[in-house]
Each structure stands twice: as structure tokens, then as C-alpha cells.
Image 1 (cartoon, rainbow, N blue to C red):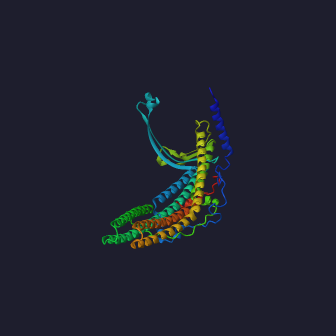
Image 2: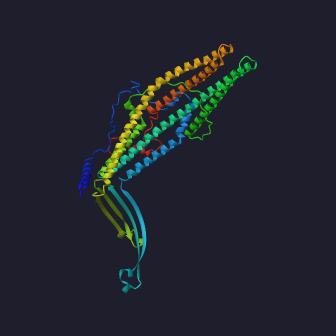
Image 3: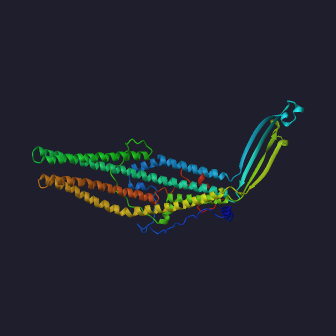
Length: 498
């Protein structure tokens, strides 16, 4: 028989037991700032030096009171946000539930029984015949049980629950930031769609007048019938484009209404034009970003909780000590139950040392180690994504501004070309095809300019969200959750549970 696997299993169990004994007085949690597998630069590459200035309500920089009201409404009524608040309350309740395991458990009981016992069942049938004994028993007792947390296992589990609660608070703050950004983005999506509809309406009006004039010229024989057909075809194409833009507007309005928690009736009113883009915010330094971003903070707290869970799993190899006590009264007559002569009590203790559980405890440690490693890599991934979002948004900020400027000049030139080409057509110098081409270029150019302004606003919203998204004053432990939790929870990631 090959005994090596069993020997290896016993050796591994003994090693884990020794590790648990040695670490019983030490912190089981990761450090406050986990090490990253890459070098963190002193400044962002896209913005070499700047000091971050927090802005609680960054969307107010667009100077649109209607937008401000929409964001406030969404922060109050958004269904996804109310779900996040409920999850934070659940996490807080788990903190209180887990912390209760380290306290004595006290219960009071009152019971009464009446029993009939046949003497024949005791082998006394020859003496007693069919006689039976009736007895009463009444008990009133106070029971106490308490598992002493000698090695800190229960404290580690309580600390893990606290870390999860604080992580849920950070996730709630991230959700608030996301909702504010989504409302702002959808608001300007609607404004962009309205601006495109307005451009198409103006284009259709101009083309209707042009088609009328061309068809009048056809009727008097000044223009060829083909010019009238081309003018009508161009007008029909513009009308189809207008309906397409109205379709996009209807969808955007309803998306905004749903995000605000309203019925998607398509009746919400927004601005009809896009605002000027305000000055860009300063980014600060990468190290500050990792401390400021709620998703990174949440990932760090989840990692912290996984470290505490690992510590609790390792300490499950150590003996557990439980104390029990009971005191009360017991008697056969309820009216005399609380006489001093009926007083009963008991005190007991129990020590249990795990010896063999089929590898269950070792498997639990392996699971906890795997979860800790998974959360560590999730933290690294979250930090990298946060840094990449800021670098990307900073990098394209100036590019989008120059793009908008160039497209504005191009659209203005195309609009002037429409006027010149039409006058030259009326004078018989240029064919009508030149007019159609200049009209299409003017429409496409001005539409592209509006979209470029919209792209700048979208990038600015994403930059604000990437930098932290506001709500800096919100404490992770105080986000519309029971206030008592704020003062009772430690937020120091490296603190050993007590």
C-alpha cells in the first residue's frame, strides 16, 4: 500500500496548524495598500503636472438648471441606486450578525410537561396490575452559552464582514457617480439628437424652397425636367434623414426617462443645443487616484476581507473553548415552582480540538487562499483600468477640441459653397449637380461639427467619472444606511480585528 499521499496530507495539516499557531497574534489581513506588479509613475503621462481639485457637483459646470434637477431626481429615484442602498443595508446587518457570534448567547425558557407511565412497562405488572403513575414537571431556566474567541477566529470573521460592508459603501458611492454621469450623458445625448433634428428641419425647409424654385423654372422652360427631379429626390432624401434623426431622439428621451425612474412616455424636455465645453479638470497624480476612486477602494476592501477570511480558515485548526451555564427552578407543582428549594443550576465547559475531518479544514484554507489571490488580481485589474481611463480621456481631450474647431471651419465653408453654387446655377454657369453636392457636404459637415461637440462633452463626462466623479464627502459607512454603523466600524485596512 502506498502511504505517501496520506503522509503528505498529514504533513500539510500539521504545517497549517503550526502556521495558524504562529499567526494567532498577528494580522491576517493584507497591507493597507497592496503592492502593484507595475511601477506607478509620479504623474499622468497625458498631464505631466497638476493638483487635483475635487468637484462635488461637476455637472453644474455646464450651467443647465434643468440638467441639475434631472441629476438630483435620478439620485433619489433611480432603481439601480435604490438596489445598491439595499445591498449596503444587508452588508451592515451581516456585520451585526457576525459580531454577535463573539458575544454570550443568553436565552430564557419556561416549559411544563405532564407524563403518564405504566408500571407494567417497568416489569411490575404482577404487583401493580394496570396501575400507572401520573407526574408533572415544570421548569424555568436561564441558559447561557459562550464560545471564547481564544485565537481570534470569530474576530477575523467579524472583520471580514466589516470590510465587506465598507466595500458595499464604496460600491454605493461608485453607483451614485455612475448614475450622475449616465444622466448627464443621456441628457446631452438628447440635446445632441434635438440639435441634429433641428439641423435636418432647417435643411428640409431650405430644400423645399429650392425645389419650389427649380420646379417653377422647369415649368417656364428655363430649367430641364431632370433638374426638377433631382431637386425633388434631394428633398425626399432630406425628409427621410429628418425622420431617422427623430427616431434617435425618441429613443434617447425614453432612455433618460427610465434612468430617472419615470415612465418612458417620451415627453421629457431638454436643451435643444449643446453647451460650450467648460475648462478641463485637473487630474492630480496616479497614487491619489487609487485612493480616491470608489471602485478601487471597494476592490481593496474586498481583498482585505478575503485576507481576514483566510486567517479565520487557518485558525479553525486550533481548539475551541465553549462555556455553558444554566440556572432556574424545577418542580412538580407550578404554584411552588419558584421556591428556593426548587433552585437548580449547572456550569460546564467544552474544549474541542479538530483531529480528523476528512480534509475539510484543509480544503477550506485552500478555498480561502484561492479567493484571496483572486481578489488580489481583481484589485490590480481594477487599478489598471482606473489609470487607463484617466490617461485615455486626458490624451484625447485636446484632439477632440482641435477636431471640433476644424469641422466648424469645414462646415462654414460648405455652407458658403451652397450659396455660391446655387447662384452660379441660376446664372447658368454651373450644373445643378454642383448645387446638390454642395448641399450634401454642408449638411454632413454641420452634422459632423455637432457630433464633434457632443463627443467632447461625452469625453468630459467620462473624464470626471474616471477622476472620482464627485461625492467626495460621502463616507463609505454613511450612505443612507443605519447611522449607528459609522462609529462602530474601523476603516483601517490593515487593522487587526479585536
